[in-house]
Amino acid sequence: MPTQPQPTDPMPDQLPTDPLCAGAHGSPPLTARLEPWMRDLLADPRECDRLLETHGSPVNVHDFTSLERNARDMIQAGDRHGVSVRVFVARKANKTLGLVEAVKALGHGIDVGSERELRQVLDSGMDPSHIVLTAAVKPERLLRLAMEHGVPVALDNLDEAFLAQRVGAELPEPAPVVLRMAPEPVDGMAPTRFGETSRAWLSFLDEHPSGPAGFRLDGIHFHLHGYSPADRSVALAQAIEFFDRLRERGHAPSFIDMGGGVPMSYLDDADQWATFWNEHEAAVLAGGATETWRADGLGLRAEDTPEGPRLAGVRDLYPYHQSPVRGQWLDRVLAAEIAPGETAADALNSRGITLHCEPGRSMLDGCGLTLARVVFRKHMSDGVPIVGLEMNRTQCRSTSADFLVDPVLVRTGGADRGASGRDTWNGDDGAFLVGAYCIEAELILRRRIRFPDGIDVGDVIALPNTAGYLMHILESASHQIPLAANVVRSGPGFVRDAIDHC
Image 1 (spheres, rainbow, N blue to C red):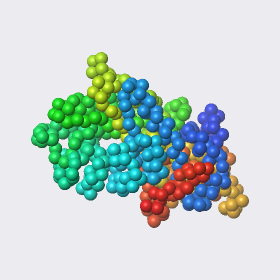
Image 2 (tube, rainbow, N blue to C red):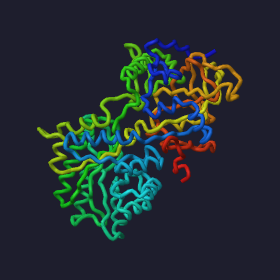
Image 3 (cartoon, helix red, strand yellow):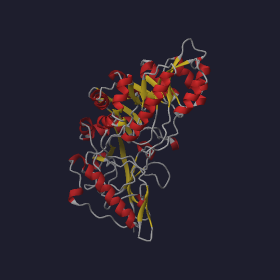
Image 4 (tube, rainbow, N blue to C red):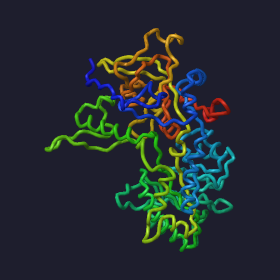
C-alpha cells in the first residue's frame, strides 16, 4: 500500500479549461500557454508520432516565429521612452543554429558564452558588431578569437583586462571591449559574482592615463540575479555614473548593457499560480504534500515554533507566472526616478546612451516544446504510481528545482501500435513521470500528474515552452544515451537542426 496519503480528486473549478490540456494535468492545474503552432502540432497525433519515429525520443521541436514579437516588445518599450534599445539574444538559452539564423534574419544580436558558440555565430556570417562575448570564464584562446574578429568582449575582472591588453597589443587596431561593472548591492539587491566595482575599474584605468593598450572602451555591462525592475533601475543609475567618469577620462563609451533577467510567464492564469502555492504551502505545513514527489517542499519546509508550525526556506523555482513581463517590465525600469526629477530614461537620453539587453528565456517564449514517448506504467514497491518516459530528467530542467507547467498528453499509443496489450491505465489517481537514468529520484516532473482518460504505452507526453534553457542548459548523455534531437520549422514541416551534426 502507498505510504503517502492519497490525494483528493480535484474540484471542478480546478480542472483545465483548455480541452487540449485536459488529458494530463496536476492538481491544482498549471495550464500551459500555447502558441498557435504548438496547438496545431499537439492536435495532430500522427505528426507527433512521426517526429518521434523519425528522430527518436525525446525530440525538441522549434518554431522561432515568436522571436520577432518578443524582441519587438522590448524595442517598442524603449521607443515609448525615447531610448534606443538593442536586443542580443542569449545563445546559451538554446543551442540550435536555427536560433542564430532567426536572430540574424531579424537584425538583432547574439550574446555568446563559449568558443564553440562564438565560432558558430561567426561562421553564420553575422556581423561582429552584432555579437557580444560575455563568457564567465575566457581562456586566452577564446579571448583572442573574439578580439581578432572585432567582437566586443565583456571584460569581467582585472585579470581578464590584463590578458586583453596583452592580446590586443599584438593586433593591428584596438579591439572593442565592455567593462562589466558589479553594482553595489543596495535596497536589498542581491550581490553578484559578475564584474568588478566601478571603483576597481577606475583605479585600473587611472594606472593607464594614456588609455589601456590594445583595446578601446565601447560600453559598460552589468548582470544581476533575479527579475526585479527596481534592481535594474538602481544598477542603471550606478552604470550611468560610471559612464560619466569614463567620459571624463577621455573614453568614448556609447552603450550600457544590462544583461539578461527579462521576465516572462509560462501561464496565462495568475489565479492558477496563486492557488497552486496556497495549496502547496498548506500541504507543507500539514506535513502531507501528496501532490509532489515524496512530499517535496520545492524549497519550503515546515518548522516547529512555540506558536506552532511555520513555513521556512524559499521557493527554489522560476516564477512561472509573473507580471509585468518584457516590454511592460522595461517600462518600469526606464520610468524609475534615479535622481530628483530624473528618470533612468531621462539620464540615458541626455547622454545619448544606447541600452543593450541580453534576454534568453523571454526571447524564446513560445519557440519550442519537447516530445517524449511513454514506455511503461507501473507501481513502485510502496504503491506509488509512475509512468516511464523515453527521456531523462536533464532534458527538461534548468537550475531550479522543477518545471512547474502541466504536460500535454497526445494519444498515439494503444492496441493499434501493438504496445502492451494492457488496458488504458489511469495510474490510480495520477502518477509521477520518471526517466531513463538508473537512480531512484529520476523525475521528469516532481508534481503528480493525473490522466482522466488514462494513458497508454506509445502515447506522447509534450512538455510545453521548453526552448529557453530547459532543453539544453543541463542536458547530459549519461549512460551513453544520445542527446535529444532538435528539429526546426521549415515550411509546412520540421527538419533536423544542423547543431546535431556539429
